Amino acid sequence: MKFDLDSAEFWDPQATRKEVLRVFEICYGCTLCHTLCPSFVSLFQLVDDNFGEVDRLKDEQVKHVVDQCYQCKLCYPICPYVPPHEWEVDFPRTMMRADLVDAKQRGASLADRLFGDTDLVGSLASWVAPLVNWANQNRSLRRLMEKHLGVHRDRLLPTFHSETFAKWLRKRAALPKGNAEEKVALFYTCTVNYNEPEIGKAAVGVLRKNAIECVVPEQQCCGLPFLDVGLMDRAMKKIASNVATLSQAVRRGYNIVVPSASCSYMLKQDYPRFLPTQDSRLVAEHTWDLSEYLIRVHERGKLDLGFSEEIGKIRYHQPCHLKAQNIGYKAQELMELIPGAEVSRMQCCSGHDGSWSVKKENFEASMKVGKPLFKFLKTEDACTVTDCPLSAVQVQQGTGKKPVHPIVVMARAYGLDVDKPA
Image (cartoon, rainbow, N blue to C red; front, side, top):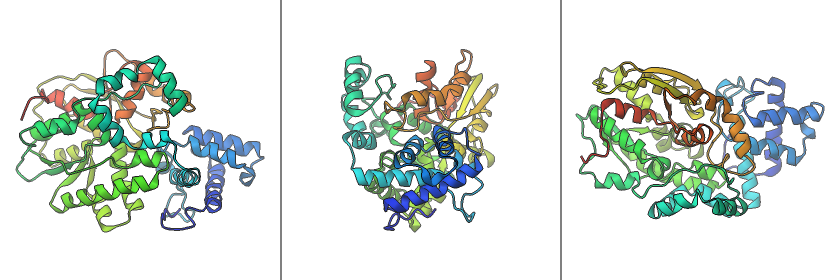
């Protein structure tokens, strides 16, 4: 499937339906992904109900399958028909196209605009963080949110902080200055900035410990939340802005490191598709997941192995968007460098997937998707870890115990006080 946003055919509802049904028919004949996510379960059941004839699916049935795809991307690495195969099957992006076309036809709701604009919501919420956090736990207000915004009343929402990572960063005397052999530009992501500043602080501390020079270019949300709600124009503004600043950093000799799997996936895989320019390809080619980059440093014999604190048993969840990058288990490799660390891994979907699980119609399904992971991580004698901050919220919802990021584990093993002024 060619993801040509400038093509009139791409935005044509009938052409889109035709492409969706083409992909559905190939998937129905394969069934490799039959239990991978609710979207495939529904697809195969609905086609069975229509005696195996995909073209008999009604529009509302097609939409049901599309709506249940939460863009985990797990089908793509195992699909035998992805490009350059002549059938060019790309299930998640075909579903994304259907979502984008539908959103363009019906227009965006207030909830869509709020879910998509993480920078606006995050910056406003950080100013009154205690009030927002209280409101997110107030049962009466949550019932109103469910009624008017479609946010399930029981969905655990991310915590906001008065001191965002960006504010903390501005208070520091200087960022890590190394020997110029290792130079990175930190794309810290909106989730880290507004909801999980500890991850950003730990990243800065670990980079400093390893004499890695770090700069933080001007940046916005990667654009994925706007894509999730079908606001392509808004997403493209974010993408274009980030490509402009990040490509400049690359040309100055910096690699881009990203602590969130979904955002590193966006920069690596989707930026060149949505904005096919030399600059976007340059950004993609020089973007690394943070753990992936640190393992690269270790392979060159330059990672500081002077750990002073024991970590012990670790239960590690590898998020979907890391598996989809086909880079192996870099966070696990990194944590296994800590003396005495015993790392057990599970790769499966947590079921959160951006704004999908927040919606009242998807919440119960999201908890079912995450059940195997909850069982794996629900242990009293181990540190639970995930690279995905939203998966951490989902795990906390399912187990009562919130995992930490691998870079936080590294900072603790180094014995770093990440809040200490530079």
